[in-house]
Length: 167
Image (cartoon, rainbow, N blue to C red; front, side, top):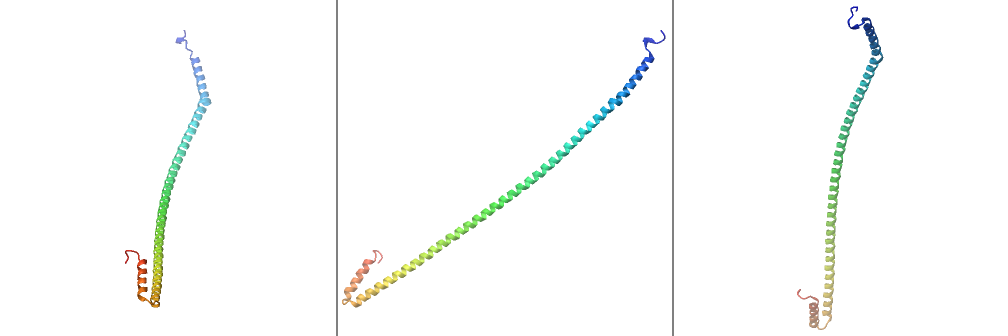
């Protein structure tokens, strides 16, 4: 044996190491760099997607807050209009009520005035009738020969025309 124990050939080992280094360099340039670039691009793509999604989410939340604000303002406006409508309705009700009261007072006033006019007319009519009756009675008395019999007849007629309990 020539001094190499275990049958190791250094030339073969160096050749294998050189082949391994060439293989490693080739694989590094052919596989590792493209895979590393692919992975970097993929990572960047997903990172960009995440940032885009976060940005869209922020915009959506901002839009949601804006819509909620607008909705709250719309609710306030609706409540204000509802209140104004209720106040207008109450005002109209009071106005109609006042008009109805005024109309009722006018009707009562007109009825009282009409009753006074009718009473005056009835009283005037009764006075005329009484005056005519008195004139007729006076004519009969003056034209009649027997004044006392005519006077008695007049009193009898007057007593008959007066209802019981008024004399």
